[in-house]
Image (cartoon, rainbow, N blue to C red; front, side, top):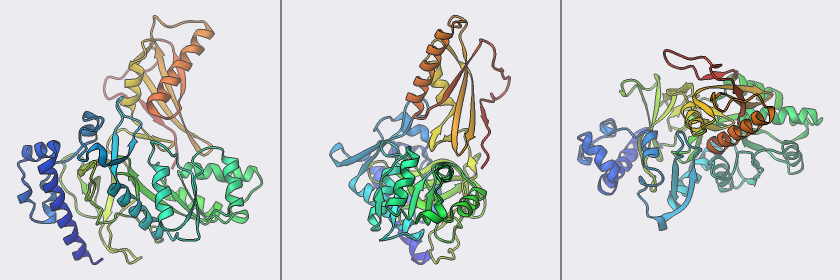
Length: 424
């Protein structure tokens, strides 16, 4: 679609969205009034900057569904995040929301060079996590055959890859590295003994160096995918040019802002990504501050598509970690530990490492003086309790190291809670 035509379409969709939410959403009505902006003030696409931001804490503060603008009988699915401060975020979907999500991924997979005749192994998790089901329906829409292998049981996944002539895989980059290493130990060459030719990788940070390593060692092309659970899940990918992730302009309007001032930045400058999802019905998103740091490129791509692109995510404006595809906030760990009376919840340290191809997380936490014991059985039971509580809250396993009272460092300034040893 020509750029000017796309902008006219985006303006019409934005105007409709703003009117709808001003009229039917108590949350957005109040936010617009606080910002002294009325739907009639949105006269051009650039006027989007007059609209107030939406934040992650708005979702948590309105848990579970107080921001929904669809009724219960209009909802067809929920997805739920792992939670950041003890409360997860719940995203509801109408049938149209699922249709737009599926259409977005169908376009994206087509842009990667996939289509009818391909066999896609979806090795993202299925369930409350959005990755597996999102890729599943997108791949089916383009006529590909889906192998819903989910995560784990890697040797079996490699056997199925060979037996069912899998041509594409969707998973985290670290899991694809693990698959390659496991295959090597099994005496299987992904490059020579399988039909795999494409990987669609995301849900955790990765680098161009990892892309080069995977492509060279496995003999495939790998593409970056982007999305968050709040926006719907994985939605956008690179095209075969491998030069930025296309944001389909009729579904979403991206902006880059200065994270300190909130001021809009021009294309080409690095800042925080802000997204407006133009057609979302159940949980609308206007100017949602995603928290990811990137650069917007609005020049037409060499592939011929005019949809703007975001470059590889360069970091976060907050302290969020991504461990095995799961968002983990130190504040979430602290909140969880504070609920365990036998430990000092304010004294902890998170060590993230990469063992082989998989992320690992160790949480060091001090025991309270009252609970401290020199009995091995007591310590083992307490360690298991803390590990179980963290797993239940974070939705990702963590090793636990119990420390004696006062053993961890104290900080006069900003606490250094995280040691991230991973190399991307």
